[in-house]
Image (cartoon, rainbow, N blue to C red):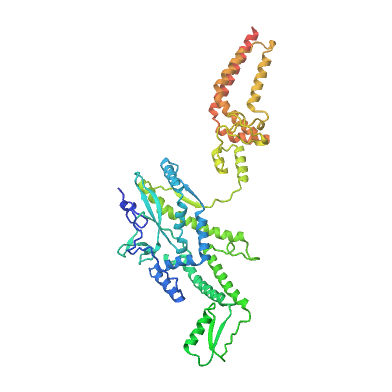
Length: 541
């Protein structure tokens, strides 16, 4: 039997599929407790954190990325918008082929995707947007004899590193602290890059860290300014020769009144405060700087600012900017679909159908807007010209269900009373009476009846032989004639001119069996000739 291997050529060990291999351990190296490198962050410290990640140790960079999402409300807002934009998209499954097995596999996958937990699991998988990559462990279930994902568990990316040789191949930090290859068929590992390069440097967080640092400086200075501006300065004066205890008592008195702006000095000393000419300009400086940094973050995460920062009279319409965001949304959706197809769908099929080699495809995409009116006009014209179109396809396209038996059917002109199946216009494919002014089979029946009435005139002689021949011909040729007449009736109902009817008939005739029609016509000519001879002979007698 052929050994199953993953995308890195690692053999599949089925014993590892049903147990946790990357769970947290309080006493081991995979601790759920995190550090706080964002505390006291400055340019030198930030540079060291990024350099460590470039050397294959991204733990502190990942911890900083978490702190940025917790402390910067704008960053977590735009990043969450981008994630949720993808998780809300429609998920469809394309069959690998029309074979029964492939259809059954695709249907099993569709059923699994209906799980309520899937939305949260996809949101966690898309943590790769900010950090550049993520790891989600697949917990497989084989209790019913078939392999199926039981649930998807997010794993802290700090518990993984990359091979020192290429900084691309993911490795699991083992219990002994050594890097171990990822077990095959156990992890969903998407990568969504903000830029090309090695994986630890590809996430958006790398580009946003400097804007985050400068914004934190701005917010700190703004907070200090806001806290001290407008508060009175308390100055306590002590006489010359006052003891140190007296000075300490005076300072505690002025300090405890309120705020931090307090001082003491000997009598006769002066302090001069030089104020800026425009305090309002100083306030605007902090706000403008913070807003400018937020706009740069919006551009990095969403590709635009129109949907996050409204500007009166700004260049560019919101619709155009939204199109830019949809481009990013489509790229994220394709990346997520590709990761799920590679790391989830393919293992699922290989485990249950070894050597099958055909896989359904998960497609995550926003439905394209379509003009249904134009589509109906196009399909209607094609049907009028003889194209066979399934009613099920039309119902599916319009998002409608096929009416149940006995349901009230909407009809043109307000005639919405329920009708029994088989009646004209009852929704079972029979054209309504108003659609055809003179149905072809009705005209034929009337003509036959009139002919019989005329021949039953005493001067016309006995018509019994002809009636018998017509009845036998009708009975034998009924299936072929009914099929042809039913189709011609529909064409007559839809045609707006004789030329259009002619084109429709010419287009439909190649699909009618010519041999059967020729046989019917031959029998008709023979029956007519014999009936005529018989009637002529009787008349002579």
